Amino acid sequence: MTDLSQLFLYIPGIVIFLVGSGQVRKRNRTRKSGNSAENGDEVLFHPWMMMVEGALLIILALEQNLGRQVQAMFCLALVLAGAGVSLIADYVSLKRRNLQVIDAEIVAIDSRQLSQETKIIRGAKFTYYPIVKYRLNNVEKTRKCNINSSGQHTFRTGEHMNLYYDPQSGAVLEKHARIGAAAAGVILTVIGLLAGASILPVLF
Image (cartoon, rainbow, N blue to C red; front, side):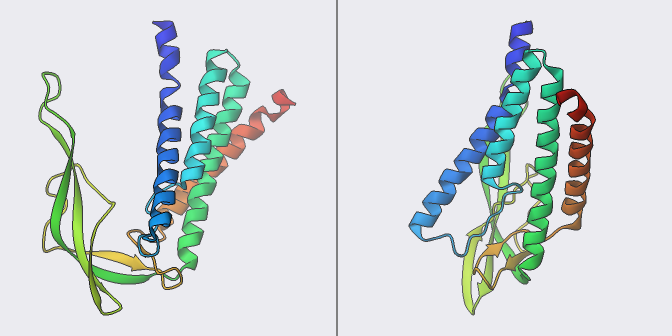
């Protein structure tokens, strides 16, 4: 059981690393197809950052299983500080873009089934994505949004939501600069730096 629990420690890092690498491949395919101009990045963390964070979590699990608590703590400090800096950088980047608000109307709801009903899990699980229409440069466009919800009635046809146009790159984003994300980034960065500073005397 102990060996099995030690293996479980690797799962978060592996999952995050694979998600990040999948997003990198998706970006590369989108750029090659020439469709990257209008669809902006909608991920909270940059894919390369996710891969680095995933690798650090894998190393953290390894150090933890080897009983090297100080090294594991140092990896955790890097994970926290890295996530915090990424959130701050994302906020600053979005703030500098001078995004323009676009009114979009939800015209349909797309669903994706995540799991089927079993004897243990009651009811099939779905994720719901709004499909919206909007006007950009006097041209009506339709897109399936990346934002989603597990609640069937979170999005309703006929309702309106905001998209954000970046005039410099031509990208249409679904998020804007949120002060809450920046505040969370500052907190994570401070915690990571404090954790790292507390173990530096032991490491060196």
